[in-house]
Image 1: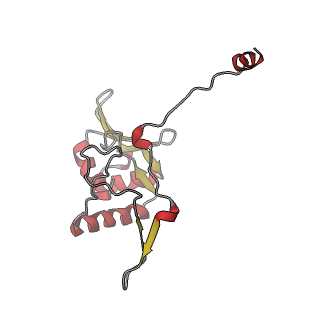
Image 2: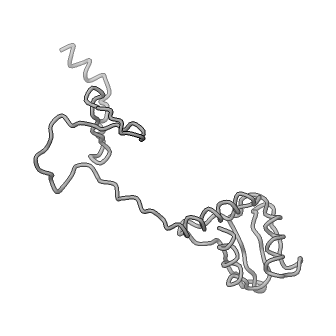
Length: 167
């Protein structure tokens, strides 16, 4: 009777199990073998405890897709963009749908809004004035929200410029 009172007094802990795709099957360290080939670094190979004779079609663990290798031209283009982006004092983050945060508004006259600016938005404003060849009064920075407001619909001209800058 005393044992049942103790069990009733303790709160039941919820039982949570990890999903099958999160489980990792580890090979004990004693079963690992180390081999070194000539003029290469040492590689670690795992020897399974039981070698299966047939491979099942449905593996309990998901297989990672093979890594895609970019072409050399694309790789150098990405490196150039990353290098240029590193020189800048500002960054324009993309939206969750991987688009540039450029919005056109028509209330109280046409204007274009550039959002999600991180860093020095005043430096980006000066760069946009130079590249879009606009007057200084037409490009304004809201320091509180870090948005740039441009008078007129210039989304068609602004998007390629930001993409060329690497954003």
